[in-house]
Length: 49
Image (cartoon, rainbow, N blue to C red; front, side):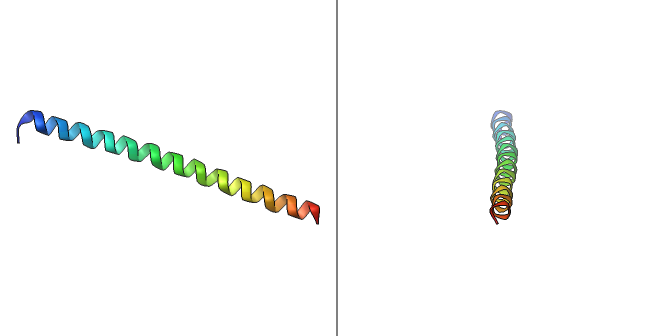
């Protein structure tokens, strides 16, 4: 493998790792938002009796 292609592969791998990190962060935030919405709905049901 030439140095140029090794550099390109390293760059692609770095970008994939960054994308994975961003996706994981987004999924954590989405999960928290869904959980918060569910908690709010449960709380409102309790208040309604």
